[in-house]
Image (cartoon, rainbow, N blue to C red; front, top):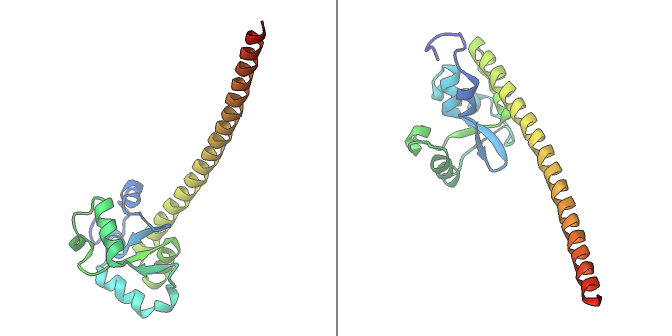
Length: 164
């Protein structure tokens, strides 16, 4: 990323690496968003606090101590200090979209669009994987039925063999 520039020089892979799963929510942390938006994290939090009514809990929430510890241990984050010292705020896809409405800059708007597009692609991939999983489960059920039918045939063959 080019510091102080409105040009987007952030790859989708970099953004994807900053999306975490906390509970059932795909989220991004305030500090990571500030870096992507090329603003100070404190400014981002100030804008959120000034517009808190725009950020219900399903848009943004502050991590608990436990969630912060899990985030660090499961995501190759060096330490809690890397999260900014205090408990960070986590933004869902909707919260990220709302950030673009409260932090008025061309870079934030463009970056938010890029981030939302990644969230959408992730959701589409998840639906595809769910469809594949469903089909695999269906195939597995068929094989179980076939296994039972084959076992029954072998049992009948053993009975016929015992009679003859």
